[in-house]
Image 1 (tube, one colour):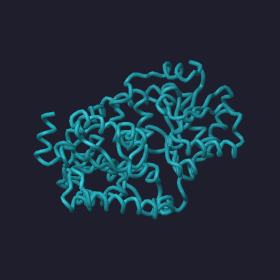
Image 2: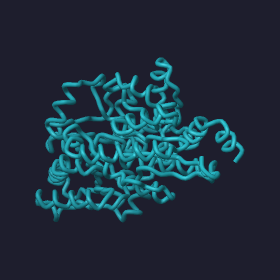
Image 3: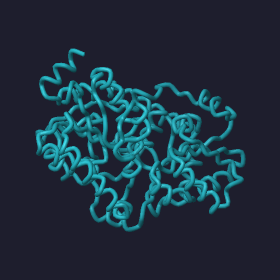
Image 4: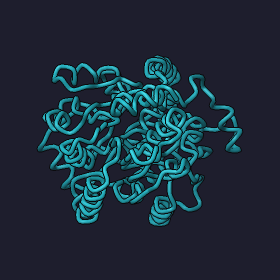
Length: 393
């Protein structure tokens, strides 16, 4: 701490991390008005005065092959962060998700006596469970989003706090489909499908064409159907527009949105979504969904070799402990399979209503005022003098 300024370094590696980190920053700013935040972040963090040494997009890569293609740049960013943070240590470091990037950095900082916190438990309950030992060596505390996670860490003696999920606090519990359609200028009675092919450029490269071809098959069955595609950045929009051209779908009723992912999902009858945080968002918005994911063939081969512990990867299925929504991964994620699954859901009101009941119960379970709980956990990891000052402010 220098001249009364509390210095908090953070690294978020993708759009979902930007959202979680921004809400945590707001909660910390309310309690620590003298704090400054810096490191790697996205637009939501920057909007709160975050000093980004590197842009979040540089780390937003998923899949073994995709990471290898960008390895030199990613390794360079981590080396730069390590050098700068060790030379001028922050009062606390918070790694927001992105465990493959953050844990090594956190370990180096912890070894030098810097308080390190990892926000979002890696999915050790799904695969690569041995990482828990690396986590224990790297962090002073884990902030867990899901209620079953703390027990895993407690058994290993790793400090952990269950904070709930910030998205559950942010998103409405009640169904707001009609208001979302009005906001987006959509007919209240139209058949509307939302397509969310991912927030990373690498995801668009493997899934954009498949999602578009799926929409074309649905359009052939329901000629009046409308399709909404929220895209987070100019780069992902450019990639999707190129895919529309390849699929000769420019004249189809596929509407691209800049952002507005939540409104697009709320307005939809059914959602086709890439595996990831967006599947939880769809569940919290009470939307029936079909989950899909595709990656480089070599990445998929490597993942199969490593193996996992669960037969499903989508968060709604993980949290339910069983398949409640369809998943189609890699070779199974064909336009025919996806279109048929979406059409089946769209036509089955009983199944859709049952999913909405389950999603509402999940929403209430995860609604824990997460940003405030996370902020208190961070303050508890500060050196005693700083923690006492924060409690008084």
